[in-house]
Image 1 (tube, rainbow, N blue to C red):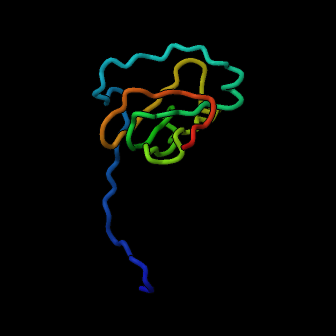
Image 2 (spheres, rainbow, N blue to C red):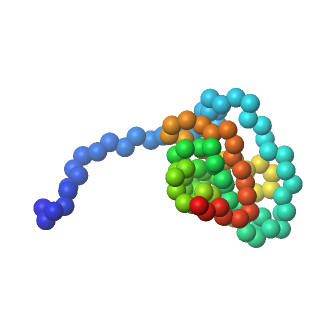
Length: 110
């Protein structure tokens, strides 16, 4: 087959992300008053310093994967995804859970 591997059969497992699937207790809504003009122009960045490896979503939109050994330490949340009021962030962590997630306005790189 010209050095290519042909995959003929595979199984897709759907992972459903639902409210209430976390086993972490004690999380509280973040009370903050960010600079609304800056956020609406530039968006935010999600910093997951204490989360090892996984995928992050904001209001159902896949922000991308994170890994604590990557040079990119933040995931960009475009301003168009943010709404006035409640914005939901979902984390699909592969190994364990972190204790802190932070929203910052500038990218963090190692």
